[in-house]
Image 1 (spheres, rainbow, N blue to C red):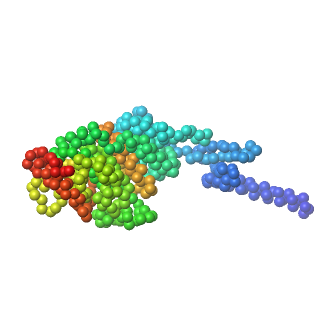
Image 2: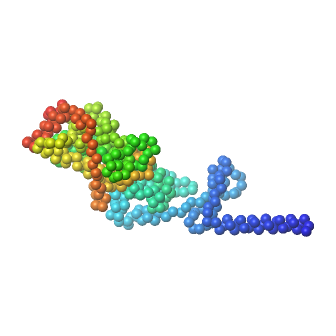
Length: 421
């Protein structure tokens, strides 16, 4: 066999190998991505066309030739969201899904639009504002895992995670100063009058309660977040962070303190709050904030009698102050019932939780202000974990004032606080 025949055979073998490799590549169901070359910033992907992917062509950056880069984007269905976003979608179904009616949802979207809106790019259209807000509210309302939220809205998992945090941050920046703030002088007078109608106790400007939000065990300071009371009750190791809130007679939050570790008792959380600093500055002089037995009696914090053997006067006072306590407890029950993400351990990182929980409180206020009623099946029952503080009495003047209120409630149906100076 001469050299020409050897050369010809070699070429034929090379051709056959190349054809086999080509056929194998064309029938593969995998997408093979080559690494982006230095300074090109693009990943080349090739795949068989199966109808599930969309091709985006992009010129090779930094090259003088006409070679094109092909990027593959998974085509996800957003039929569910398109149906919800349709004008024909029933109002009651929309409210069941997003915990608020269409009008309230539109108000939230309009107020957040300037902050959360993004511009379209050459490669893809930006996610619309309504869909961004809907992803966030759905996630807060249901606590649904991100992988399911992703399928429901036709977006990527990481995109949904980013949208939730962005919208929650926008709610804190834009809506919190408007919908969650300490009452002004005129509103304070109305709040006092309403609480007096409820309980007969004068000068009450708020009802205070502290609740716990379950979390995954953090990587640092684990012992600080360990919740002994929840662990003993549930027979399962529990970790939590706290949410302290003050509400008006309608159950609207006027002050919140979020994020302190779950091992802290209520009185210590109170001492760490901005509310406590406001009181130290003399801004709460002459008014009461009502709390349960987990708080100490102070010049501005009114709590029930907690000794074992109560007089008839003290017992009657506890019943009256219990009417005010119930307002904040029911508000927290609606907060957790409306936003189910607060009922179970979440995927949200510990450092992001205060923003997310703050957004839940703001959205709760908007729903309460607009009289958005909750579905009966969303009702949530709170379990009290009151711990009597180590120093339950912080003020002799407050003790005298409470005794006077209790006496007047029982004997004169008028509770003055003249002993408080």
